Length: 290
Image (tube, helix red, strand yellow):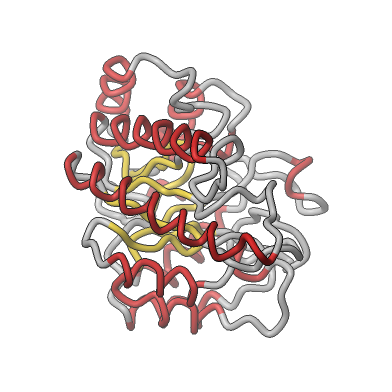
């Protein structure tokens, strides 16, 4: 049974995004019942969205009762943009993500996941360098605040949607993180995002490239055509090779499954119940955690 694999010392978790349309308490109870020891809390237009959520103390009590440890919190990204050319929009984005950092700290989490820019706004070529400068400036501000809260920030790679490529290449994000040079700033590698809109992608090489800057993972499988959020083994990713890369860089964070429980989202693959597809979950445990 799955519960025999997922014990309290196993470094595997799951994002509450799996049931983002359901109440947070219901989702957490389902996750705890299966036996996941760690969670990533979803904070974009649902669950722990800092513009609407209140009740950190009751949530902390619930997490303790369910024996769930928060490893990470995903900050908003659909309505914020740390690369914004408009300074008021950029400042609003900073303030909103700061609230997510505060939430994570109060819940004794470790990492806040953020996107380098909005995927809804693509700059002209003449504006791209300015937006990259704004990303760097915003990350500097956020990292300083995160350090005060004893939280780390993980910059997540995005899917390539055929417009602005910056953010979809780990090499670009690694250069940015290295340039800023703060211990509180690292990378989140989303395995599915890495393959979207591209050909001949070497996911293992991305793992190698992240190196010690890798502090968070979003584990999901895909067909390379859309951001499917399938369970490992349902798509085209070679998990054996990827696991070797992670071991070579001595990744010490949590293996967070960011999988969908929505049939509409996943497409032709049957949607994920938390107790379904146990073979796939055993696969990720065996390959990634041995």
